Image (cartoon, rainbow, N blue to C red; front, side, top):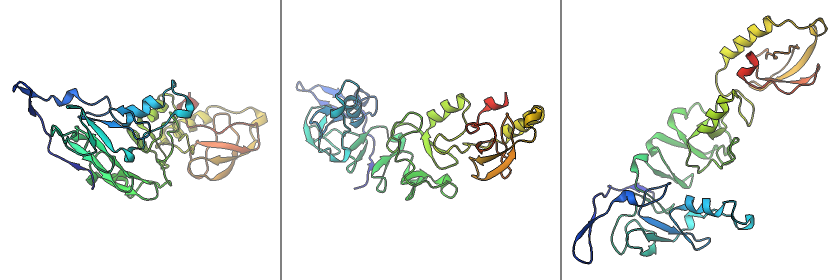
Length: 291
């Protein structure tokens, strides 16, 4: 059954042994990852954790022997423990003992509970996991193998299994990360925070394919001016080199210049020298080049 959003239960009251009423404060339960009223018994190591992320962080820490590090197989979780009455039971929405709702959002397929329904969680059968943002706002791209915003359905560049790899900056697996993601113009994906950090260091090319991550025409104009006001010594004035453009992938033969080499087709300076002249690495897309 597909994950669904249930009405939120707040101010739930239960009777103590002496007959007095006790109010359940839902915010007292859960962990730093999710607010919920149950814990899981990990089928891999038979230990109890607040959620799968708590398990994975504990079982993949540097204190653990590398041979014993592992992630919990989320779909194989069979037992949960009610955080209110400590009753261990099969995975289900409400506790069989005290009746408390263990999570306002519940997905039987993912064995997943979460109280914060403002995330608009939904289960994607193609992805095989629950995602956030509202099913009506996303579509699943079969080639990329992931859910993307409908706003880019007709414009995004497909990259096979685009999110089924590690972030090229921090090396965290992207497919089921809790962090915000961004899709670059080239179709490759990475953490949004990693992209922002990369931009702070004036790096504007994809770490995977080296294509420009945004429209850099303003920078190309500044480099045009820099080339004009920086004459080359007589020895290099007629020196020609072959370049490969990282953006349009066209090979051109252009005049060598220490500032950079401009692609004849798309006018980009995001190029690399491939033959002729002094050896050099590719010209990375960097504001530092214009200073």
